[in-house]
Length: 441
Ligand SMILES: NC(=O)c1ccc[n+]([C@@H]2O[C@H](COP(=O)([O-])OP(=O)(O)OC[C@H]3O[C@@H](n4cnc5c(N)ncnc54)[C@H](O)[C@@H]3O)[C@@H](O)[C@H]2O)c1
Image (cartoon, rainbow, N blue to C red):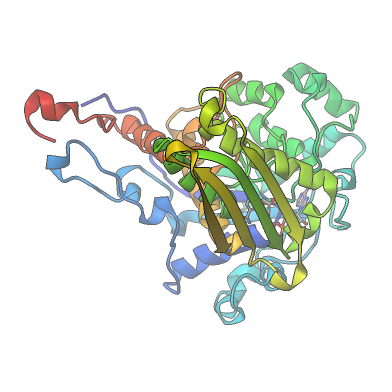
């Protein structure tokens, strides 16, 4: 058996701070409160319900993940966050319309007690929002200091042992990394110069990392996917992860595409369209914000099919994605995929997927798992980009120059092996060599 890593216990309270208390954030908070009261189940969360095989199959060891690695207990979690609107979490959850009102009533006092802190906001990055619950600031550097004060005050007020941040704020407009994002020194100078290329999400990430607080990015924004903030994460020994929660249509893509690829079936075209009527859909109705999402979603197939390696199967693949804002459906997104595939001797076939999903119901367990796992990573002494958390992201952040892994099954193997490694268990490669060597599977 491999040597166990030094993983500190999850003692005391864990503060989960969320920039953006909208549909996703209120759904995870309400869900955790409901689970704590025995009113609901944490379905879809690996940390709460998943198990992990250990050792050889003949050993029959498959504990629950939460019994295998030292994760924070749900009863030790304290939520908080920021928003550009001043609604408390109960009001925000009512407006988001994801959860049944009767369920929200049962946890109303807990949710009403959660009042957002004023946001670090810049309307230039989210043109369709006009919230007024925002911090006044002279320079972005001072704005970052104010966010740091929020984090420190929250930690002290709630007597937290540790804090993590998970960005659940709106998708910011598309922008590419520039020279000011290259190094920490340039980035800090740009904060002081109020450079327009520093997005609000970067300010939260900078504030967190400066304090050694782990940060995950649930939206497709650049945020901490810039060299300056990766450098800061390493300097302060802090784990980071991103980008863009893998839910809905992209989840389906990364389940199905590896299967087509595994069977060496060709794909000529993949047309994906969605209707979505929540605030996220409204923000994404702006072309600059949609562009950020589009880029995040488009990379998935290319990295799974690798047309450069398999030109005869995927060289002509036409991939198109549309998202249309359609208010009547609220958070209940509907997506359609038409996939034109071909098989033996080039004969064409079609696959149609019609997924009537619930966006925030799929995203909420991801937020919880990311918060618990990134806290675990910090206690295990891990720092910088946590590629083992790619499982949860549409557009996984990687070390520079590496292609992201999108295949959900490979991502799960990596996640599970990281947990085994932390706890000193043998990694499982599914090679089955032990069968040939020792006569057992
Ligand atoms: N629901 C999903 O399936 C899913 C999947 C992947 C990614 N995401 C991303 O997660 C994010 C949240 O989604 P949602 O459905 O909850 O959206 P939402 O619009 O309901 O909530 C986002 C909240 O962020 C707030 N906000 C915006 N800028 C802010 C800032 N600078 N500081 C603090 N608050 C700010 C908004 O006021 C809003 O309340 C979006 O970026 C979305 O694209 C969602």
